[in-house]
Amino acid sequence: MFQLPPLPYDHAALEPVIGRATMHLHHEKHHQKYVDTTNELLTEAKADFTSLEDVVRRAASDAAQKKLFNNAAQLWNHTFFWTCMTPKGQAPAVDLAKAIDRDFGGMADLKAKFVELGAGHFGSGWVWLAADGETLKLVDTHDGDDLLTHKGLTPLLVCDLWEHAYYLDHKNDRKAFLEAWFDALPSWAFAADQYAAALGEGEIWRHPEPIASSGTGVAKTRSDLGR
Ligand code: FE
Image (cartoon, rainbow, N blue to C red; front, top):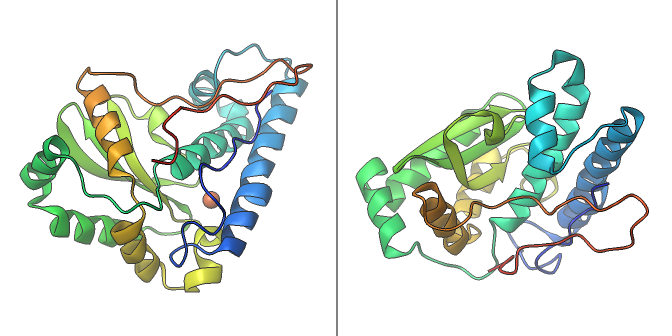
C-alpha cells in the first residue's frame, strides 16, 4: 500500500504563488485520491510490486491497465512536484547553470521556453525540465503521463498544468502562474542532484516505498525533501 507522503513544507510556504487553500485541496484531496485509487486497483488485482516506479512502468505497457497507470503516475507526479519545489528561493549551482546556458542560452531563455511550452499545452498535463544524458530538454506530457515511460529522460523539475494547480490563485491565467512559479519555487538544489544522477553521480530520486498493508509505518521520504 502506498501512503500520501507528507508535504515537505507548510501549506502556506509557497504563497503567494500557490496559496494555502490550493495546497490543502491539491495535497489532501487530489493527491490523496490518486493514492487511494492506486491502492484500490492494486488490491483488486492482487498485484505484486516492489515500487511505484515498477507499478507505473508495468501499467504503461498494458492498455487494460490504463486506469491504474493514470492514478499511479499521478501519485508519482505529485510527490515529485512537491519535492522539486522549495520556499527558499535559489539559483542553480555552477554545473547546472552552465548546462542551462549551453542548452537554452541562459536562465531567462529557459524560463521563456518553459512558460511558452506550459502555457501552450492543450488541456491537463505537466511541463518538465529533463536531462537526456547531459543535454537539458523541455518536455510536456498529457494527463497523468510522466517521464518514467520516456526512456533516457531524467526529470529535474516539473510544474503541474492541471487547473486544480492554479485556478484558485491565478484563475484562468496559466501563463502568469508559470511565470511566478518559475521565478520563485523551483528547488535548483534538487534539480542539480537529479542532473548529477543523470550523469552517473548519485542516485536518481525515487518515490517513497510502499508499506505492507497491515503495517503502521510512515512513508519514507528523502532526507533532503524541501530544501
Ligand atoms: Fe495536480
